[in-house]
Amino acid sequence: MSSCEIYPIVDELSSKGKSFCIVTEVFPDGKVKRGVISEGKVVVGNLDELAFSEKEEIDTPNGKVKVMMDCVQGNPNVIVIGNGKVARHLVELMKFLNYPVTVVGDHDIQDIDANVVNDISLLSSLIDGNTFVVVANEGGKHYDITGVETAIRSGARYVSLMASRNRAAASIQRMINDGLSEEEIKKRLYSPAGLDLGSKTPQEIA
Image (tube, rainbow, N blue to C red; front, side):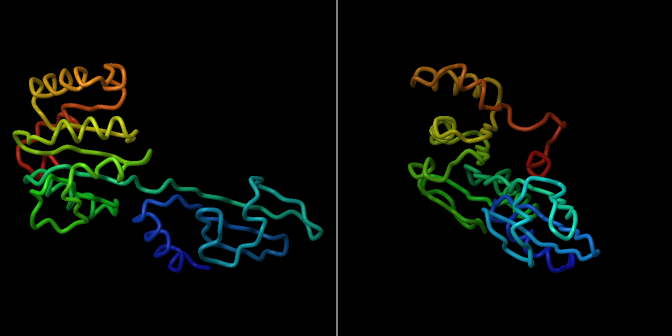
């Protein structure tokens, strides 16, 4: 199986956030088998049970078979909370990079070409341990802190809040007052969000 046949499958799995392994089996007679394994099964290729072995070399009646495995963690699910210019550019960037992306708001999201959940109360149902949550509302909205707190409590892998230092500090204090521990906030929350690159425009900030 050629790379040209494998790449579309890899692209599809990655866009769905699924982990996968590209496996190559090399037999003593020079025969080569290639394919892709995901979620415990072969999704493409003519691989056999040797592909599921964790060994790099396997003894068979016909000699040693080499098994080369290149595993990839699926892209994390990205949740963008907000509908301002930065949020919109961030959504476009995530789509370009083939990340599964969902936009969440509170009945205020309009005209965004992405999967939209327009009810902040449903946020926790969208989050798992491989979810990145970015709150990106210029100037802030009433549901920003709800979004951050829900993401932290739901075990999101990464949570960030686009805010000034003063607003971030006030938000953290409010979450502490709501019963969230300072230790858990420090462990999971990044604010200001991203890196200080001297960004000025919404595109640069995204």
